[in-house]
Length: 319
Image (tube, rainbow, N blue to C red; front, side, top):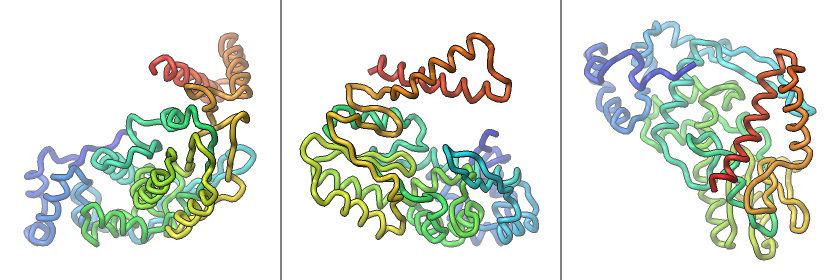
């Protein structure tokens, strides 16, 4: 599903303006123009949004008021565990896709962020740490589900949305008061909400002469000198005071000559590379594909693994 254009079905700003009532223009047009000038989704109220998308105000109002009814919930396997996904139904997904795409196109994030940003990847994030003497990483526990609606509203206010617009966006993009695991808007909104924390973590890295990167909920520091004695406590302090929690089971510290792993890739050499176990799996997948020994339902998944391995080879050749 492609995201609709910024003005959805309207060909120009003036055409959208003409579709609004005199009352709505008086209340919201100045704000709408400011948002459009920044290439931000012009969300100011339920009524204006319903006109933009061609939904009835009653339907969109119900979606806003009873958002959870417009999701379907299911579980998927994530390693050895199961993950609950709250996926929006089509009408809500269209709006979320539109919001996520245009927020992503209009916003800039700090250089240390590699997840959910056009033109950036986990491979590039891992490359930052190649040649390090040690790696320290932590995961935020249930990142989306612990990013609450108040954080989302505050972050949207900070980039130029009025209170009502921030409220509409955050309510349409949250499930039970938190970012939905399954919404196409959650990735970009999580980056936006985490901006101040990213800046605090980057300052901590600079203060200690370290390198810092983040891919989604995976936070990594590295260095060439000794590990700062207070690094773990300082990182945890920044994250917890921002309202998130570290997954204690995923705290990781490794030093040379042991293998150093970032975002699932080894960074002991000049370029990121696959682990030995993953390389063995790739060889097995290639054999299955070449000999047409895979079921149709597994083909897409295996081809995805092969494409990922190829992208890592291409990255090392490029740089």
